[in-house]
Amino acid sequence: MNLLVVGSVALDTVETPFGSVKDALGGSSVYISVAASYFTQPVRLVGVVGGDFPREHIEFLASRNIDLDGLQIVNDGKTFRWGGRYHYDLNVRDTLFTELNVFEYFKPTLPESYKNSTYICLGNIDPILQLDVLKQVTKPRLVVGDTMNYWIDTKPNELVSTLRHMDVLIVNDSEARLLTKEPNLIKAAKKIIKMGPGIVIIKKGEHGATLVTENTIFTAPAYPLENIFDPTGAGDAFAGGFIGWLARTEDLSPDNLKRAVIYGSTLASFCVEKFSIENMRDLNYLQIHDRFLAFMELSRFDER
Amino acid sequence: MNLLVVGSVALDTVETPFGSVKDALGGSSVYISVAASYFTQPVRLVGVVGGDFPREHIEFLASRNIDLDGLQIVNDGKTFRWGGRYHYDLNVRDTLFTELNVFEYFKPTLPESYKNSTYICLGNIDPILQLDVLKQVTKPRLVVGDTMNYWIDTKPNELVSTLRHMDVLIVNDSEARLLTKEPNLIKAAKKIIKMGPGIVIIKKGEHGATLVTENTIFTAPAYPLENIFDPTGAGDAFAGGFIGWLARTEDLSPDNLKRAVIYGSTLASFCVEKFSIENMRDLNYLQIHDRFLAFMELSRFDER
Image 1 (cartoon, rainbow over the protein chains, first blue to last red):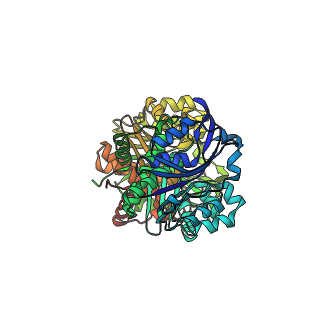
Image 2: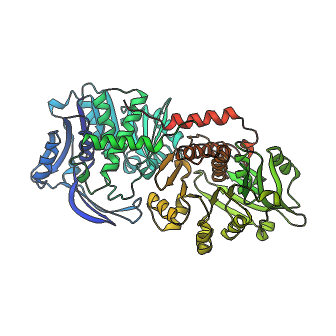
Image 3: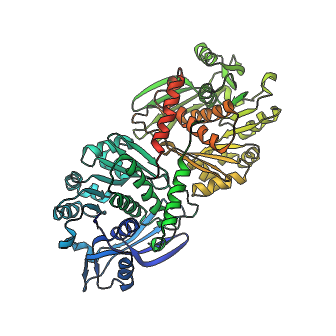
């Protein structure tokens, strides 16, 4: 229990072939927290926004029982904004603009009440800040982290230092290859395990995700959606569902890690069906459970 | 029973980062037949070679109980040759040369003894020739076909005509997208189903394969090999394992189609562990069954 999430809070402007949205609620800590809130509550969020951050977003996050004591509000600053456009092939996207605003000087500071958090999810931010967060937590039980090409390229040494303190690294396939200079994904995952995290999850977009530990390899398919509306946040929703399930069950056995990967995939699949966090506003237990079972149906086979 | 395979017979020259091989046994009908021979025998092969085709290859194929009555030998011609080089990232390859030789004028003619074949596997050849083969078969029960970008680009109408007579189309993801002009793979598969084949299998290389029918979607992972030696022929070995299992069991139920996909994936995984058909020379039942079970372990999860 006691899940802590740190990452960006953003206002996203997104165009896809199916529509567009301006200044929609986004950011890694938002997607992670909202997804995780379906498994454990409250989720403790650490992030920063400007004075322009709409009150309705605060109210929505609070309605999901997300603890906002760690959300810094810089009244005379502007919220981080990101703009992107997806191509007809949704695997391809262009970043149209990035306005860091208050996020540029973000220094995550944990409220006293957060320091006993045991499940920690480090969204994709500067690895130095990720490590700062960990130093403020007294006794973490499970540290899950994300990163991206930008940090691998610009702060490789800092990233390696932070990796030593992670139990689970969640990266996509190109990031895993970049980090290890190894094209074979299984070999890449095993190299990452040697860098610190005993568990590596490689996200492969429309091809699902693969969990690799010293002794286990588990592959989860992506849910075969015919209509993917907006892929933004899918990876963070995955991380949120994954750590949310683990924080709820407090069971880190291989079998339960596999379930956590499926719950992560489940939340990611809901996430991409609408813009922003729209489709994660009000899921219910049955919807989540039904999709978990659909994942089982999708990949299960028997001997004759 | 009575499995008929038509396709190329080739001598392949392949370079990978791990070694190279010259004039090794290859070609779609060879990979398909050899893989299928682990499930049903004899396999009836239709193809063409030149007078230079090594006697040892004939002997090997015969040793797998592959019926060679349909193998045309053009004594004064040369065998089809293909040369390719794989990059360090094995997903990327360059074709170095293609010498069609006797394959350029290949006209598949079925020996009388083949015409009652019920399971038909049409390797990747001109769709006009694929249709010619089907016209010579009196009562096919299951027609499985492969194709490639080249035919989609150069003979789209002929391909569409042939597709109407296929029950299963096996293509890779980029071919499915090219054929349907649809980036979403599930939508692409459903478009192909409307073109004739009630069953579509999309091969995704290191990401496994997806089976799509009107009512079923099934995803199989790729076997997580750390050392892929030579990807040549993997797709054909998949097709051979798939149709071989179906011909053996004569059961086209959804559950058995899933098993067939796993047996296809199993043979493909063996295929890529060595050059050419080397690793499929002498598999035994236990090896195949163990890998089938490993696929189960890889993708299985339970409710808590």
